Length: 203
Image (tube, rainbow, N blue to C red; front, side):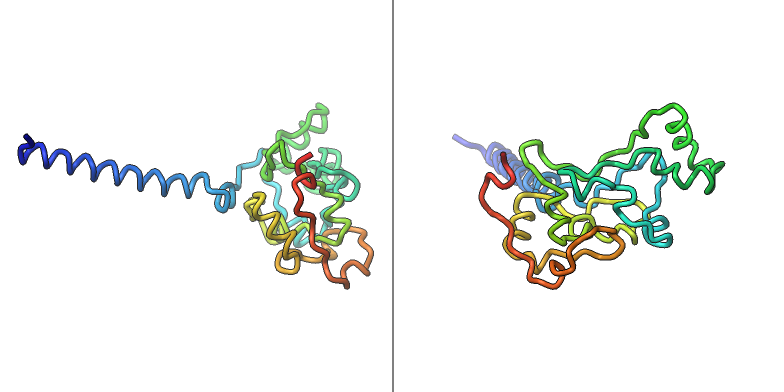
């Protein structure tokens, strides 16, 4: 037979379990839910590269540094040589560029921290998208306004499918700052819907 003390303990345990489950569910949503996962991720980079200065004020196009986006499935991080094309004469003694100079002299890559990452089982082809007139800002935001690059979109399967189903709501047509060589007719026509079958992204 339960006493009032036992009854009170059981009620406290039940309340504690309910609170624990609620806290766990909320934590799971904010830490693991695809809609919020990694959005805003802004790691500290080994060199304080400022896109707002380079792409914004100086109007250096995206493809000057990210040379392979029009021809490759992957967008590469620029090699140090690209930086030194300018910095052999521009601000060559700046303390901020010490790692860049060492990288160039020692022929070792700068250990940039990757920001945008897809699961290994998902295949995304950069060239296919940018050659269709889809601007970099559609996925990466307007980097020329960002001092430090952060992940702007969730890059989840649901987000990709939303764009494939209604590209007019998500796609930004190619802009001059991208430097992409795109057929002008593509920018004047309606953006076609993307494939939705599994094999389009999962080979």
